[in-house]
Amino acid sequence: MSSNPLHKEQFETEVLDSAGYALIVWNDEVNTFDHVIKTLMEVCKHEREQAEQCALFIHYKGKYGVKHGSYDELKPMCDAITDRGIGATVEELAQ
Image (cartoon, rainbow, N blue to C red; front, side, top):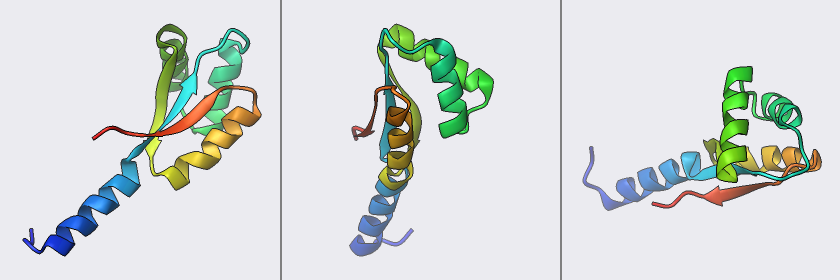
């Protein structure tokens, strides 16, 4: 690996941009498990088992990071989830 500081900065920026965010889905007392599971399968392209596990984490923990990636990748998914009446946010991961 190069010791060039510009190369290091560019690499760190690329890593942050590619996976520096999480799509957080929030628990509520309104939406059913089936609705959340179906939404995760359709919007996030989760397999049924993964969507079910995420729904359980959301229910018991109050929120859960269902997907990681870049902000530009996750924002449209977040909007699609909230359009279905489910609370969701995109949050920067702590470093």
